[in-house]
Length: 331
Ligand SMILES: NC(=O)c1ccc[n+]([C@@H]2O[C@H](COP(=O)([O-])OP(=O)(O)OC[C@H]3O[C@@H](n4cnc5c(N)ncnc54)[C@H](OP(=O)(O)O)[C@@H]3O)[C@@H](O)[C@H]2O)c1
Image (tube, rainbow, N blue to C red; front, top):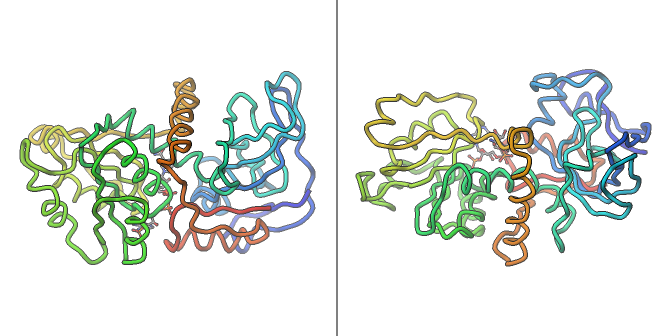
């Protein structure tokens, strides 16, 4: 098959090599999938650089999130040829190629009617959104949800899921073009945090963060750093700040006296850990997402779709803060 391999560590554009590589073989319990689309994620860049927490042996193929069709079934795998599935290939034998293997028991059905790019790109981001907002954040209809980096991958999913759950959604993003994208996703209010005073604007929209009077009930934060600090100032009485990621590069502190005085929660969200600790929740969340998709309440945003051959360019764009929604590659 054709695909990308990394033979030495470095910047993706320097170390990704395209060419003929051996077809992967499905082991017992696995399926072989013809990749219809692979979503790009920040860890794909880090793994090429050798900076990701997991370090696959060289040479390896990146790509953590795929949609595809089963073309062969390993011994004992509960699947059949022709099934259209979503899944995460094993680290190092990833989806930046024409074929990939998946553990059959962890695959999920490809939602009916979704394009390959949407199906590949919705898996981790929308699972994270539903896990965060419904399970960890207990978002209620009528509550105010503040979503940071709302034009990005997880942010765009959180805006749509929040609206579908009946929340009033405020999205933040950097720059007018990204703000227009957030509005298009259905956010009720949008704040350009590259030019506006975030705290003042949230207070203006919701009222001052005093008991029973304003502030954001749930805050979805993939950014951290200064954005987390600002979030503490605008979280409502009994609010929940959901810690999703740290794209700012700084882990913020949450002083416990402040948490106590204002009666709020700082809640960690690590979706991937649920796959080990409570795997039974994953298909349940997927069913919720399928229902929302079928009802027209979510519509995954693919901001960049490129041929698989252009993986280095896709990763360059992803790494330079220049993308909206998901970045996907199609063989
Ligand atoms: N907790 C979980 O289970 C889970 C699951 C999936 C992903 N994540 C994490 O969520 C984070 C976002 O992932 P994503 O796929 O949504 O990424 P993404 O699509 O690249 O979006 C990230 C956005 O963050 C904003 N941002 C703010 N400050 C930034 C900075 N200093 N550098 C770069 N971007 C900055 C940018 O939007 P603006 O220009 O609008 O500010 C950027 O577009 C990552 O840390 C990822 O690891 C967590």
